Image (cartoon, rainbow, N blue to C red; front, side, top):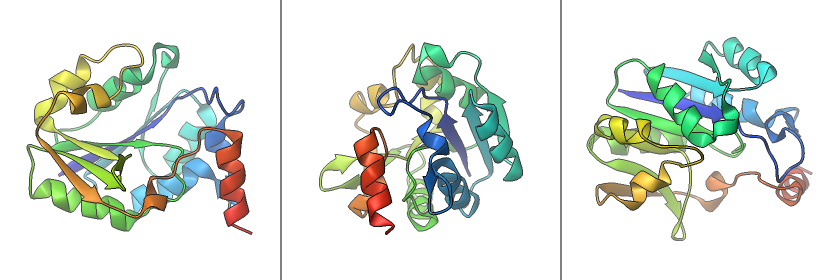
Length: 190
């Protein structure tokens, strides 16, 4: 089984405000992620965030909610907190909170691909561009726990040959980093 880890501790520096709580189609961007994760085939879901409002919302979805008191360290802290608070599993699927177009169908396809290859990293890809969420097998746990500061899973991916890619629609990988990204997203809903 796969456990989900939703990393929602970023500072949204390029956005200038907490992008996770921005409205998209009547609910926050992070809630779109929560809805799709909750419809997917996970053993358990752990949410890691420094934001009380995000954690409160996660509790409404019955996620295991972990407060990140050291978000300033970088993304490695969210990764470690997620793993350390996760039950035994075959793999960890890491989500970011700023992908409002993600769909449970894609998530479940990634899980299925992983279940067929439990020692491989599974990554979604579109037009040679990779994105999130990524599944890391349990055998990468110790490497993930050794990440420091703002190091991401990409460091492990770059040193691995045990990778499987799943081709997906480009829009499913869309994430929001800037006001321009958010304006594009809002323009599409009109």
